[in-house]
Length: 124
Ligand SMILES: [Zn+2]
Image 1: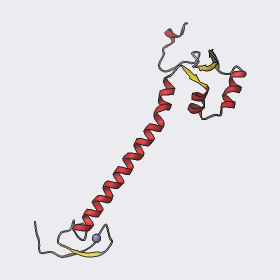
Image 2 (image 1 turned 90 degrees about the vertical axis):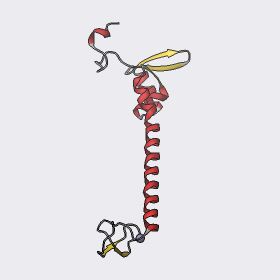
Image 3 (image 1 turned 135 degrees about the vertical axis):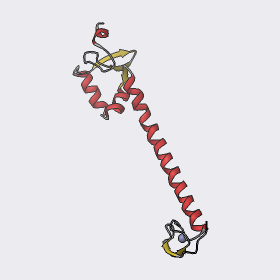
Image 4 (image 1 turned 45 degrees about the vertical axis):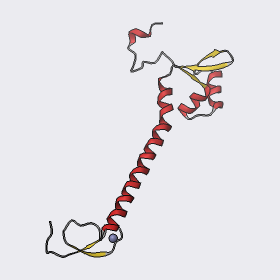
């Protein structure tokens, strides 16, 4: 669709003023259109990569939230506290700890109502 109109527009890529033949022309020429397309694709790829990285970082924490037994290291990771804090809580009896061999594990407390368990299944 060609027209005889001539409109002064500013290129969205290089910022130079140019004469366009339609009111929707965004770029001064083919090169600017291609460069803008490439820049847009590059930004999309970077965005996708960042999202993927974020998901991989959060994945282990989601897995930890479903476990009933956690190692000291996993508790540190989940609650963002130091090993000293976890050891102190175990020593003070503020968390339920179990020993398996030489390793200590923190057990999830069943006293508190959990949204996944109804009250009838807590009697054990
Ligand atoms: Zn341009």
